[in-house]
Length: 342
Image (cartoon, rainbow, N blue to C red; front, side, top):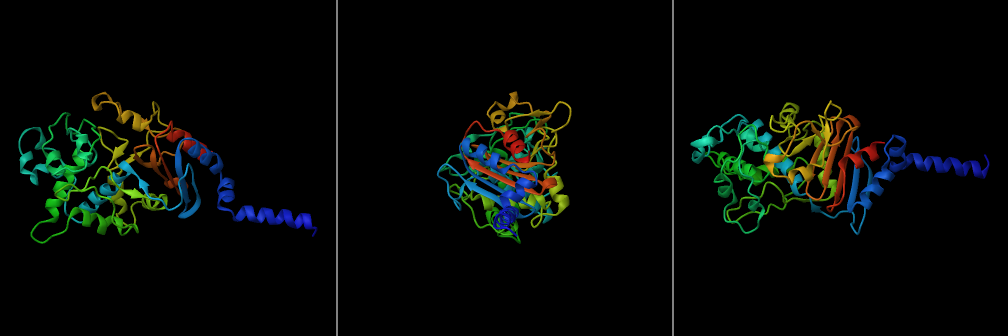
């Protein structure tokens, strides 16, 4: 065999062994996706397929192994904890909140159920002040918020419902036979099975964490949530529990328990939107009918969405987990995903 022929075959062998080359050959345009992330104030692009890391790159001064804020990506971990509590018999989704919180026994709050807290359809004022540091009791602040929407019909995205859920879970875990805090329950039932440790909880003076945000994670750490989504809940939940968790509500079929779905993509009238932009609009002017994360992308796409376009995407039909971290930019979910998937 001639030296030139041998050199050519060695090059081919090297490309076949390269995760990037293999992914490109499988139809993933990782080079173009990386350029898109880098040019839109991204810090990291991390991709796994079928459980293996096939790409990770860092931009704009970021380095491998750095933990960054995932903002509302935090919500999904507490959503898993809520469904774990259902599996463990601590709560039921159709249980009235007023059964645990007597102050909700009167007025429009008395028939609100736990599931409506978790899919943000309970109608409670969102109260962004709950994000602040130095609060004495953010749970009580949330419990005291007034109703501004119709329970079951109004999607109001904000921290109040989750803090009310935390108060319910705290009372369930501190009964006669239990002395576990919700944070310890989260760590035992969700974080440790995913190979994750304790997180930044931003607790108030009474030790109540902020459920809506706060976690810091590397791309590889956050990707473990994606692994769970590909595995339909394992190793934390049963498949049936995961199906219920991702169902969506009549107020917003695209959201539930901290997760956004793409089921409307490809349907007549589907509307690809910038979810972060729509959440900035007053809740009573938002339109969530037939919204999708990205058109021309698999409908089984699931996303965790954090401010500044922190993104975790899972596409079970392609065995893909994708993490984008960075800062606020003119970024598009659809543009990145269509670029990557070719």
